[in-house]
Length: 459
Image 1 (cartoon, one colour):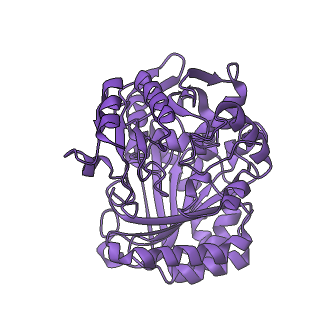
Image 2 (tube, helix red, strand yellow; image 1 turned 135 degrees about the vertical axis):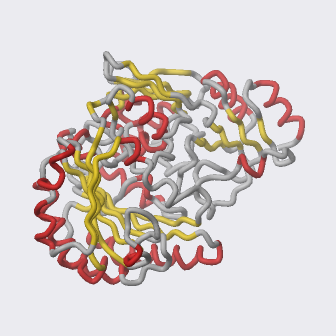
């Protein structure tokens, strides 16, 4: 992009337009995953929907590449594009709660922490991820699962409406009654159909929750995973628990004697009476007495931000995921093999439950194509040192390749790693891909929004 084009864009927009020669550029192009090192020709920090509309018109008419950044958490680095323009929504960071209607409107650049904070004042929440720094936009458009999923469904299941700037620069509000085909596609179809400048969510009564963490030595993984796969789907929906393999971090609440030890376990969230969590977790001992077990009541936003400092922005990341409707003994053998060989202290594997309330949404009601999945798994190779980037990626890919035959064939779109094939995207959308491609042809026929896990417009 030459200087004349850059200045023309600056004249068209209210928010700043940052180019490679600007002192703010190095920081502006940073994203959560430090393994991503892309150099856009410009980063447009949009102050409102009008800026987004003007940016889309300008980028399209100039024939430039376009990417969209909400919270910047994209593991595959899809919020940046070399030589193109990133439409950065980070200035559009706000959340407004209507306590009477039990809804919240949230800006497209907001994080989960913004929504959690605003809703908590009214003892309300909506399902999100497990880190407060996650962008609400990418999470919602991809589906969104976390601590409240078994009780209240996926993030997108609680989406009431979204304001969207389309490829032709126009602005629409999509809901069940307005642009229902677009609304269907937005719930799970990723950023393929436009730029969502705000969201309206349904909220639920959540305030103080019970947190518990149960850990066993990693060589107990066979017994623990067999117990977990049978116990959790039958447990009350007030109980959510994601399974993890990890090296115990040197931080509270973990005692010093287990710091750095490889372990497996479950992070529990209880939305019933906080005093009832230990009764709900009495069966934990059926897996064998844990080496560590801890529980405490805490405000929901505190739980949501608990891992923020453990896994901050700026680490080397590579991840891949799959859906599972069962955890087979053969799959447990794979987990055991790779859990014993964690390549770095932060590398991990999580299995997030996506049953309960998420199963009460019809299989064709949204673009999410795996309503019969019981777990959404992710393998994350993570380390602060760029010298270990290739090692964590190799561990992740090998783990995924060995585990994939035991999966349902597709995975959570937000867990697709960099460089995975278009066939992988098709597998993720499964029977819904053709319908999504037809909607893409209507709203983005020339595939302007393609810096994503891309759904190509139908011919």
